[in-house]
Image (tube, rainbow, N blue to C red; front, side, top):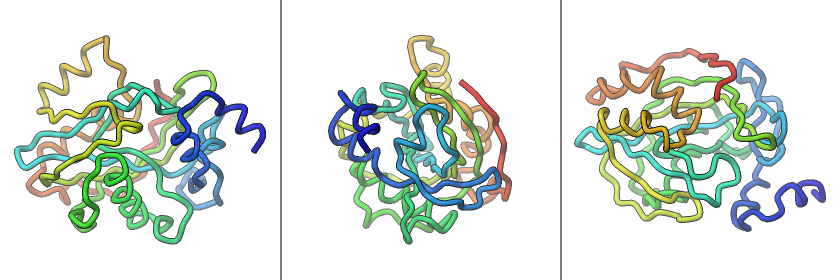
Length: 223
C-alpha cells in the first residue's frame, strides 16, 4: 500500500480511491484467476483483467462518445466510447456477461448520471469480447478482455466531471472526422471497436442481437 501511495501521489483524490477497487484477473481464455487492485492491474506491465465497453445510441441512431476528464489517472483527456470501465470482484459482477452488464449499469450512473432504474439490463445487448494490450505511457497500461455492449435508448445525463469532460452524440461521418483530426487523442480500445465492430453494430441498430458472437477476438498489442 505504501508503494501504491507513492505511485498515486499528485492525482485526484477521488480517482485514487477508485484505483483501490478490485478487478477480476483472468487468463488468456477469460477464466477467472483471482483479483487485484485496479492500480496493480494497470501499472507497469499490468495484469490481464476484465473490462467492458458500452456503445450507447439514441433513437436517432447517433452514438454517444465521451472525452475522459483530465483528472483520470489512465488515458486522461482522450475520446472514448459512451462508457468504459471494469467489472469488480464482487458477487454481482463476476458472472461473465451478466456480471459485466451489472458493472455497466453501475458506471452508466456513476459517470454519466443516468438513473439506474431506467436501465433495463435486457436492453444492454452483448456483442462480443476482445483481448488487447495498450500503453498509456511508461507507467500505465491497459491489458484487458473487454466485453462490448450496445444499447439504443434516449437517456438524460448528468456528467460526473471528475470522470468525463465532455460528451457528444455523433453520426458515422462526424465520428470519422473526430478520428481523422490529428489534434484528437483516441482511446486505443475505442479505435479497435471502431475498426472491427462498430460499422456492423451501426448497421444493425434495429436488431442488435444479429451481430452478437461467441468469440474472443485477440487484438494483440496496439497503440
